[in-house]
Length: 310
Image 1 (cartoon, rainbow, N blue to C red):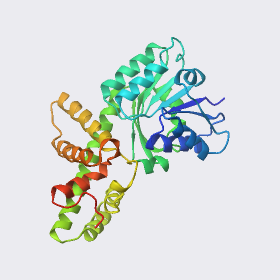
Image 2: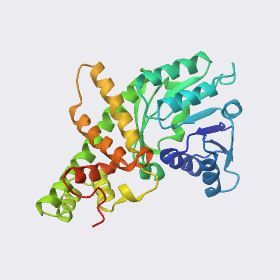
Image 3: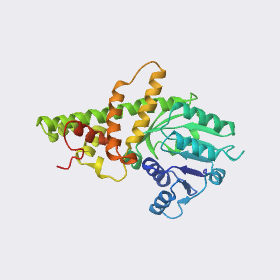
């Protein structure tokens, strides 16, 4: 009999991941959905076939019903709060498998794993690489750590369902996937910064952004093309909800910097990106700013308007 699965956290990534789990995961029970803002659960459930999901309003009772619990949350504080609730009642988590997909500090992951195991449950660290469109398309890369036997129990819901590949740390520390995830995210913020400065320079010099976009598409493609398109189409300032919030990107840079300094080095390029991200927060405010808004910040520093609507 297939396990009962609970999904906690329906941000941009969680929505796409849970949708693919319903559509391609061969579930024989409705996927339980929990989000702090219940409307997100209701909206996702309404978009999927009737009977394939069930919205739940309390974490504790839902954990008691579930065999596997996926969590995908915005930051360390949210993860800590959810796990405190999930483990609050003695014995309610015993025998369960918790799969933690958030991007958080490795120390937070290790602490949560310890709490989970103390309750007689199993833990899998499983951050993912990929933007929300990749989550929607089931093309994420899972970075997983845990006991080999436990990993084999959750793999059927990863590659070919929510993702296209995995990078595995079998029987290794739970913090390792998070270290790799944070290193990878420095690549992303550095790439976005290089594109933003390049496009701004192309406009200021008179070369034009269109020829530079052709260069990017032909030489790099992939995420370089996708991010430059988000910039040139003005998606970074037109969307009400960011695809990758600047606040989240700054959190990742802080964690990456912490991990790097603990290892005896300093990620200087990421610090440059963080300066631009702060400009994005200052201009757009709070959670609305998108990582691609680094383009707007670079433009503004160069004497252009933040919004590229000319």
